[in-house]
Length: 353
Image (cartoon, rainbow, N blue to C red):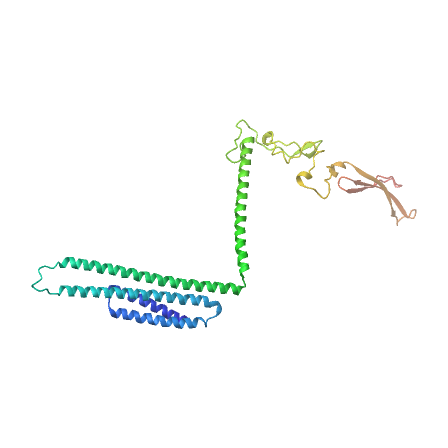
C-alpha cells in the first residue's frame, strides 16, 4: 500500500508540472496527457480504498485520511483541467469569430455598416458571457469543495463516535464531563477573585503599617548615624567572682539601644517569669541550673587516709616482718592520688622514706 501511495503522489506531482506547461503553451496534447494522469490517479485511489480495509485497525484512520487527501487533490486537478479547457475553447471561438468577421464581404447596395460599434458590442457581450460562465464554474467548484468537506467532516465525526464507543464512553459520561468543565470554570473564577482579594488586603496592610511605623527596613531606606563612632559588638560573656557567665544585657553595636524587634527573642532580665518554651518549644527535660565547674569547686581540696602494710624480713632472727605507716592523699580536683611514707626512727638510728 505504501508503494502505491508514493506512486500516486508522484503522479500528482507530474500533473502539477504539466499544468505549468499548459499555462505557457495551451494545447490539446498536454490536456490529454493531464487527463490520462487523472485517470491513473483515480484508478490508484480505488485500489487504495480496497487496501485501506486490509491495514491494521490502529493504522486504518490514518490511511483513510491519506487516501481522502489524494482524492481531494485529484478533484482539484480535474476542476483545474476543466477550467483550462473552457478557456482554450473560448479563445478558439473568439479567434474563429474574428476571422469570420474579417473575411465577410458586403454587396454594392449597402450604403454604410458601422462595424466598429457592432464589434465592440459583440466583444462586450462575449466578455460578459465569459465572466458569467467563470462565476458559474467557480460557484460549482466551491459547491463541490463544500460537499467534499462535508463528507470528510461526517467521516471524521463517525470515526470519533466509533472511537468513543470503543473506549466505552457513553452519552452520560460525556455530559458529565461537559458539566464538570463548566463547574471548573466557576471554581477558576472564584479562585482568581479570592487571590486578588488577598493580594489587595496584603498591600493595604503593608501600606498602613508603613505609614504608622515609618519606612520599612529595606536596602535604600535605612540611613547610618554620622555621630556614631563605636561599632563593636558586645561580648556575650561576663565575669562574675572570677567565673564566666552568659550576659543577659542585650545592646546593639557600639553599646547603642536596640529596638523592639531585635529584643523579641532575647533573654529578658526577669528570668523568673520568662518561659523559654514559648520561644524555643517544649523540651523533654527541664534545663539544669548553672553550677560551678568541679575543678573550681574542689580546687585545693583533698582526702587524707592513713594506712599500713607489713613488709616481710628474711635476713633477721629478731623479727619476721616490719610494719610501715603510709599516708594516702586523694585530690578531688583532678581525681588523682599520691602515697607518702612519713619519716620514722628505727633501731639502727637511720631515717628512710
